[in-house]
Image (tube, rainbow, N blue to C red):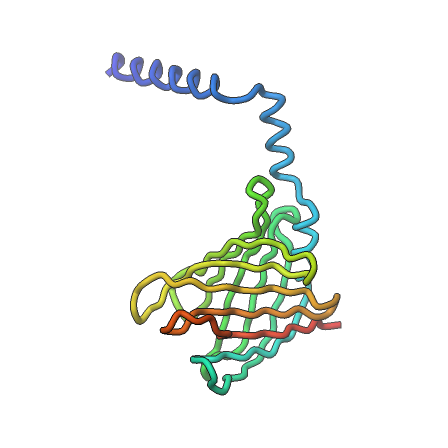
Length: 193
């Protein structure tokens, strides 16, 4: 048993030594990590979602149909030292109580926005990555979620726009059976005074 433990320790030491040889020196590594962990302009943009909000939301089940209109509230807060925006939503959807939560962030290394969404209308995650459209002050996310009917992953696009200090707008788009994009959701959020 001692021989096995000794061999394991020697193997671990060899692996650590090999990995360390491929890494930049410690000062460069530390600098890279400090830059990676530092909140910046993108995190400040996400922080515009902090506060209490009311929203009106429209859902379309198919192109050229009348939307279902619902309303609710949301609370946004920055977490983990201002690195992520967590938003908790409550309201109604299809006549049922609704709650959902998103976490949005910006990865300094990949220079991409990221978002995950969960809600009580399913048991899966919606995941997306996005880029900033400076001209329109919005993040355009491209992501995937599960279609529970076909049990396959499907694509979606979400646009998160800051209209002004007290108004935000979210739109979600998917493809119809012919592959044409159509709007499935629109939410206008107003910040509570």
